[in-house]
Image (cartoon, rainbow, N blue to C red):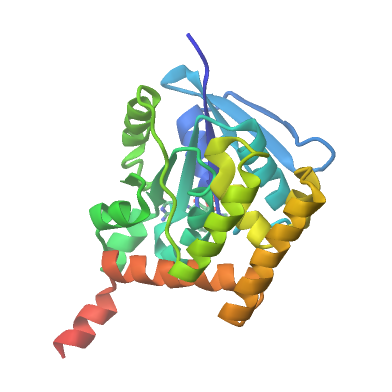
Length: 271
Ligand code: BGO
């Protein structure tokens, strides 16, 4: 049977190691990523040896600022796993969703695993997984690794995804930014694989040096993208990296407001 590859991605301390061990058992292969002393771990699912789980370094973002971020994004964009399994610490949902908003742009189907649900339940906070899933355009699987709850649902969802041709949706930013990204897509689409065009457009909007170096664009096309970014920065009165960061946090704010009820906000509205 053919191998199906699943990349495990999440913030540090989201429970990535715990979930990796729960899914693969003790048989893992451990090494280093080429050229760096960052540990590389992969293993087959205990319950299905045709599924290979690749653990990626714990990261907060797919920016090119640390070896961990570069390893993760190079692997996701160039090796193209069949599925991204994004583990989130449900007690820190805003911060963790920042990475999720970026993963949704790669064009690889994303399954979101909401870990630490035991802690959330104890706190009295309520997360509406259906609403969260709808807002993100990705399935949400609530779990607690330490309580061994919800783990089998992950394998079920992977199986369901395996037999379908899923086209991952990305989040939609405000109109002016979307207009600029659409213009960049028109320039860059001839250089990159179609499913990944959104990812490249965002990185070019941010004038990401590594991506600029990697795509061998003509001088004309480079200049055109530069102009698009320039105009956007003037219209939106900010630098392009900050524009993207702010847009992501604004979206996350909306998504969390629609899908999370904090226990303290309930009591505050009652009193
Ligand atoms: C310690 N629920 C709860 N409550 N905790 C969890 C869950 C869960 O579902 N999943 C993981 N944890 P990693 P990264 C620890 O190690 O897998 C805990 O970085 C401790 N250690 O047990 O390492 C997990 O790989 C002493 O906690 O995450 C671990 O992503 C006291 O979350 C931590 C308390 O998990 C991070 C916790 C010596």
